[in-house]
Length: 295
Image 1 (cartoon, one colour):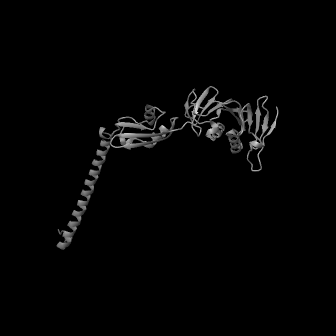
Image 2 (cartoon, one colour; image 1 turned 90 degrees about the vertical axis):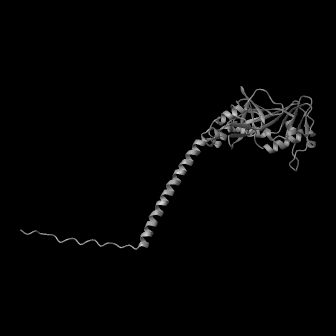
Image 3 (cartoon, rainbow, N blue to C red; image 1 turned 180 degrees about the horizontal axis):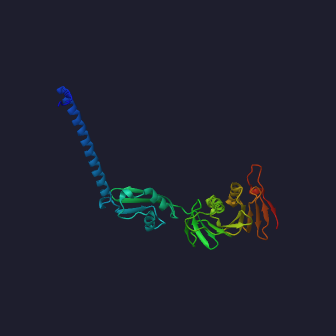
């Protein structure tokens, strides 16, 4: 019996590597291993630092220890702090300064607000308040208003240094809201009065004959100015300024009508007569040219 023997496999040739190449390959692998180790160490260090910062930001070392408010003269400081939403113990890094400032600006008296961090643990709230421009009285409501028409406070007494506006058939919005557009237009007229003329006016009365408001100024010394609707405002203010600047005797005055500012009419009480003051060739009113007429 004969065996079928397969031919022996040929031996794999032995690769002979130059020692210098082997050393180079080993060096490359070691360098790659060092880079991976360095990256891993840096990653771990970064995670440790980040974790430390998170813990530090929530620790008593970096929380809100003090909230200071400046510029709030008519608004209670406690109200400003409460409105800001910032509390003692809050993490300093988590304080939303922009959101806090916007919240404080929603307070009626506040015109603008700024909130800033002062490390390590103080928050400063800087407030700019509205300057009141007039007292507006409506049906069952009264409020101080800013020059731009925001109602900044509800109050019943009249600060003597401020103009007084009485709305015959309207109400005043609550504090924190703005006057409607037609009332703001009246306010603009009152604010635009010359200070010397304003000092002669006791109050401004706003009536409605139709859809538009009509203005009457009641003078402190008696009599009134019929301003009419809010049109030709500059011309009417010039006419009023001219007539009340001392060039016209106000004794026995009943009404100064400037609804047609180029031809203002002065009506006096019985026995004092009336006058029509036309504009001259230069477009200005000349009291010396008045045409007197009896009632």
